[in-house]
Length: 260
Image (cartoon, rainbow, N blue to C red; front, side, top):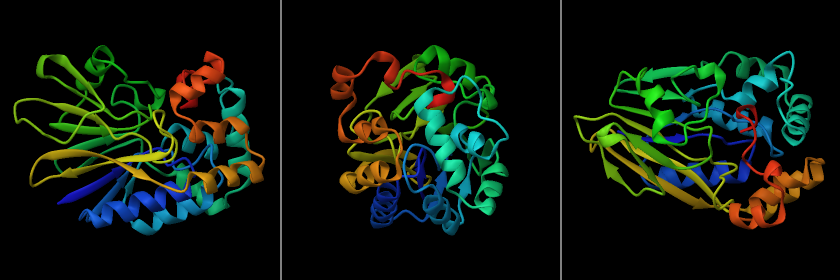
């Protein structure tokens, strides 16, 4: 069985549709969404409806939680807060209810899924290095767990506590555990012009990272027409390195956990 595992769609309808089309061409039979369906981009309601129509397992991300919650936490920064407030005003009550009822983590047959980390999933911790992954592995019961939240494709393994960034297709070894970040569909923090997801083949026990082109210009036009923060569009139009040259560190993706 081939699973298409997606995360951090962030209301980017063009990227979501491109990923789903690419995955189906590659023989994906089932999809899983690791959360953050909404936030930052201009099609939150449409993305919710597309994901719901898939009938797949979906988790709650931090942006989903803040969208359906009573209050947005004070630690959420200005741009993220503005995007969340816009999202709250532009989705239907039934869509908010759907987000509110999403689980934080799940076991899907032989593997586990979570938005951020199995170590205190409600705290939205970042896992960006092997030390942070160790805390997660204490709670992982299966051979592989998939997560998102950091918007960066990478994976960790208990084999010599290794970390792999920008990885290629690999096969799971039976004696070790793996924690795999699937990247971001709607707001990748590397090249914003390429939507990211992974294919997990349970027959081959292989994990393949995928990157897909999508209509960035349309997504950015929608952001600007909606009156969302300009930085949301710039993040998609430029690579992380180009954005870093133009913006202050506090304006990049190194915000507190709540803002990813």
